[in-house]
Length: 140
Image (tube, rainbow, N blue to C red; front, side):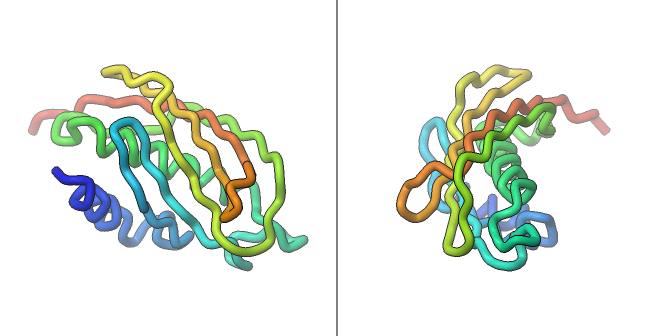
C-alpha cells in the first residue's frame, strides 16, 4: 500500500473508537515511524485546564499500536499493547500535540516504540515507551 492508502486505512479503522472520540488523526508515515496529532481543548483537560496525562498516554498508545498495525501482516496477527510508561515533562492548555512513534525494536512477536509528544513549537510534552505484541489470529 502507498503511504496515503495506509493513512486512509488508519482513519477508517478508528471510526467509532476512542481515537475518534479524542479526535486523533494520523498524519505522516515513514519507513519506521508514524505520526498522529490530537487537539488540546476542554475534552482532554484535567480539572485545572491543562492536558490530562491519561489523554497523552491514550494518544501515545494509539499511535504506537497503529504503527504496529500498519507495519505487520494483520491478516495473520492482531496487535495488543502490553506495557506503557510515560514521563510528562511540560503542560499545555490549548493547541495541538503531535505524537511520533519510532521503532526501537521491530521483532516478529514484540515491538518497542519510543513516542515523543510535542506541541506546535516542537517543545517536548511527554516521552513514552510502549511495548506491543503481535499474536497469531486463530484460523476459522
